[in-house]
Image (tube, rainbow, N blue to C red; front, side, top):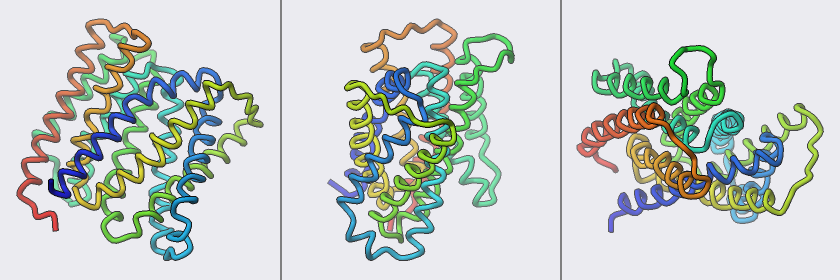
Length: 293
C-alpha cells in the first residue's frame, strides 16, 4: 500500500469521526455555553498533545511557532463560527454547509495562483450556492437563517485552513504545528469565553464525555492525522475526502436523533453535494498528473 493510499485512508477515518461529532457537539452545547465547550475541548486536546510532543516543543524553531499561530487562528475562527452556527441549526445542515469549504479550496487556490477559476468550478459553486439557499428552509432571502450564514463563514475559514496547512506541513515540524494550532485555538477560545461572561463550569457527566470524545478523537487525533496526511497528499485531494463528512453526519443524525427532512432540504443538500463532488473529481483528475515528490 502506497503512502498516498495510507494518507487517504487516514483522512477518511478522521472524516468519519468529524461527521459523527456534529450530533455530539449539538447535544453538548444544549447543556453548556458553546464558547465554554469549545474552550474546554481544545484545552483538553492541548494537554494531551503537549504531553505527547513536549520534546518537539522544546526543540521548536521560531518559524514553526509562527506558522502554528497563523494556522491556529484560522482554526479558531472556523470552529467558533461553527459552534455558534450549530446552536441555531441542525447537525446535518451544519455538516453540509461546512462541506462548502471543499468547493472553496480550488477557487481560493486559483486566486492565489493568479488564475481565473475554471467554468466547471464556477458551475459547481453555483450549484452549491443554490443548494445553500434551499437548505435555509425559506423561499425568501429574509429572514436570514443565521445558523446557515455563520456556518458558511466557518466554511470559508476551514477552506483557508486546509490551504495553509498544505503550505506549511511539507517543511515544518509536524508535531509543533499540531500542538501549536490546537493550543492557539484553546487560548483564543478561553479569552473569548471569559469575555463573554464568567464560565459556569457546571458540567454533567454527559457533557464531560462529549468534551473528552471531541478533544481526544475529533481534535488531538484528528488534527495530528490531518497534518501528517497532508505531508503526502495535496489540499484538493484532502478536500475531496472531506466531502464525505456531511454524508456521515446526515446518516448519524438520521439514525440517532431521527432528524426530519422535507423535499426542499433534500434537494438543497443534494445540490451542495453534487457541487462538492463534481468540483473535486475534476481537481483530482488534474492533480493525478502532478508528481507528489
